[in-house]
Amino acid sequence: MGRLIRGISKNARFFVADTTDVVQEALGIHKYDEYSMKIFGKFCTLAILMGATLKGDDKLTITTNTDGYIKNITVTSDANGNVKGYLVNTNEGNFDGLGKGIMRVIRDMGLKEPYVAISDIDYSNLPNDISAFFYNSEQIPTVISLAEECTNDGMVLCAGAFMVQLLPNADEDFITKLERKAEAIRPMNELMKGGMTLEQIINLLYDDMDTEDNSLVEEYEILEEKEIKYSCDCNAERFKKGIMTLGKDELKHIFEKEKEIEAQCQFCGKKYKFTEKDFDDVLKK
Ligand SMILES: [Zn+2]
Image (cartoon, rainbow, N blue to C red):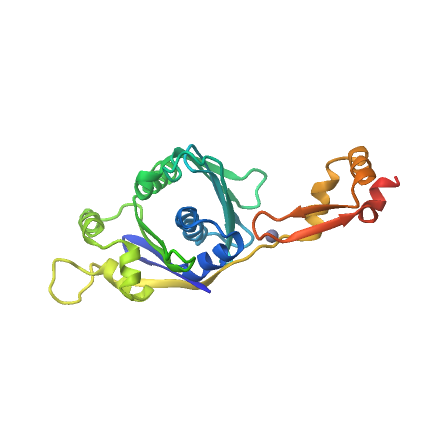
C-alpha cells in the first residue's frame, strides 16, 4: 500500500508520497521493461499527486503523446487514492524515453465537460516541464521531484515524490527560501534510499537553511494522510456495452465465425469473454 501526505503552511501547500508498493503492483500486472517502468512509475506518482486535491467522485487522467520510445501513457487517479494506467511502446528505434510531445491533464468533476489542460513535455526536462504545466495552466509556482528506481530483476527500489506549491500572495522571503531549498535539496530517490520517512521529508522541506538548529521556515499543518493503491474498477457490463457499439450486424457476423469474443482490460489485464448468448437481447431484436 502506498502512502500520501498533504498539508499546508502560511505560504505553501505540500504533497509527499511513497508509491513504491503501487508501482511494484503495476509492474506485476504490466511486466514492462525496466526502462519503460521508470517513466510509467513517475506518471503513476504524478497522477496521485495531482489527484490528491480531488473531491467526491472526481477523476483525473493524464495522457501523453510523444515521439520517443514510449508513444502514449494513460494514467488515471481519483479522490480515494486509486490509480491505474498503461502505456504503449511503439518506437523501438528511439530510446529517448518519452521524447518530446504533449501532455494532457483531464479533470472530470462531474460537470458537463471535463476540464482539459494541455502542455508541452520533453522527457529530458520532465520536472521542469511539470512545474511549467502548473504555472501555465494554474499560475502556481511548483517545486517537484519524482523518484522511480528499479533493480534489474524487476523489483521497485523506490518510487515517490515531493511537491511544494506556493499559495497566492506568498511572501517574497518565503519564495526566496523555497528557491534556495529547491536547489539544495537532494532528489526524492536519494531521500527515499537514505531511509527517510515521509514525515522527515516534509520536515526537511520546511527546514530553515539559515539556522543551525532545527527551526522551520514556518509552521505547517498536515491536512490529510491517505493510502494509495493500484486498482481497477473495470467490469463485464462495461466491456459488453463497448462491444455492443459494433452494432447488431457486425456482432452477428463475428459470431458466425467465432464462438466467443474476448476483451482485455488495458489497465489491469483482466480478460472478459462473451458468447452469442450474452448478446441475445440485442441480436434477437
Ligand atoms: Zn481492469
